[in-house]
Length: 447
Ligand SMILES: Nc1ncnc2c1ncn2[C@@H]1O[C@H](COP(=O)(O)OP(=O)(O)OP(=O)(O)O)[C@@H](O)[C@H]1O
Image 1 (cartoon, rainbow, N blue to C red):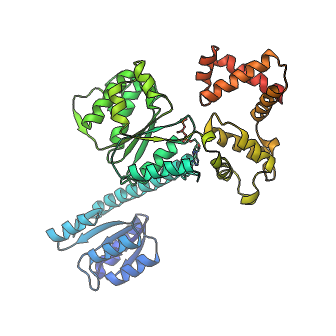
Image 2 (tube, rainbow, N blue to C red; image 1 turned 30 degrees about the vertical axis):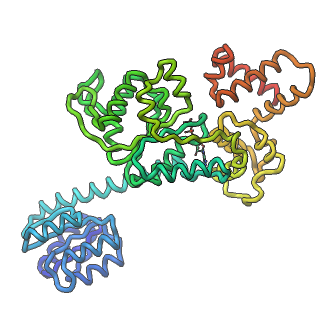
Image 3 (cartoon, rainbow, N blue to C red; image 1 turned 135 degrees about the vertical axis):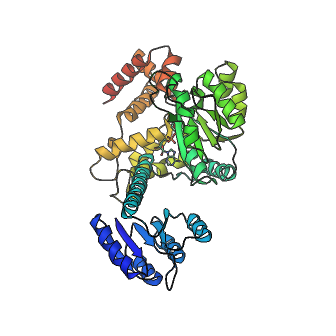
């Protein structure tokens, strides 16, 4: 580590320099507070070891300046005159340790290895946060049409409250992005937001994922585990696809939302958590309540405030701005006003986007790979655009084959079900596999 040692005792200065260098650290020695601050302004130190009683600026003042110059620095106080006020002051300034002179080198060595561990932990955390930000993509809500403006206004209103929010809309229309926008505009923006897809985990795992478990709670629970509600304490939890939550878990979630108490699986002790809940679904919860697949009391508990994210086909004004924004995720060549040819633009505008912005993102990624030099042309768009063309041709062309009729039925079922192939297959009375086979053979025919 790069260490700054500030102390006005010459004998200690020489000794500390020798010993710290022996431990493999690089050390700068300063005899008073002012030179210490000048050194802090000049060099990126990892750790500051400081005497309290020094000429010029005292040790506490040096620590305060250090926090302003380099907030991540760890500070250690080493004083010959320990007293309560200076110890309290050290705590207030988040000092790593408060040592009383004389202290042994064994003690200093141990302390510095703890500082080193803390610093490398902070670096790993920063690297992970960076990777998460990259994986999530930016959180800009693109779209200036009236529909997205309404969504933005609602977000502004609800974000600063602690209300539970239910985000509704078709699959891929941007519900998770809206959830992130609510969190970022909330008073909890600096606290963690954790997300879970309630449909992605089997029933037996979801409880432990949400609430944690104690060691031995079930076969395979070799160690205790913290649940997402505890991880999100002070922050926000995003329950995506809430409509997929198994009915037994719905009762447990309702209890947590009403009491604020969670209990790890296998434990009989509760813990109070302060978590804001944001849910999202593409399902018709009211219909699910009627069909007894979703608890009515839970629906009323989570829909205190609803945000409806419109489907992309209901906000065609946003298609081209979104297409440009999504293309910039992959390409930074070309000029912003000539990223798509008029032919490609009219194809994008004519499409019904059953899979919404996610479908658009996939189409743009596909085109960005195929196109060597921008602008993107209609020929770079995927084959299902040709399938759509085929449908129009079929409509205009009088006689048609059974296969063509079948294709129209499939396209309509997909549109009605927001691109959800499982739901479309159910509606059409075929298996998902059959649906895929039919779509693939239509693609091949159109190619
Ligand atoms: N308004 C928008 N501006 C920019 N990007 C958007 C917008 N809406 C959606 N996206 C992008 O589209 C993709 C899908 O969005 P998101 O995951 O938020 O949809 P979703 O409704 O939560 O989907 P699902 O129903 O499958 O959970 C993401 O890559 C997201 O960044």
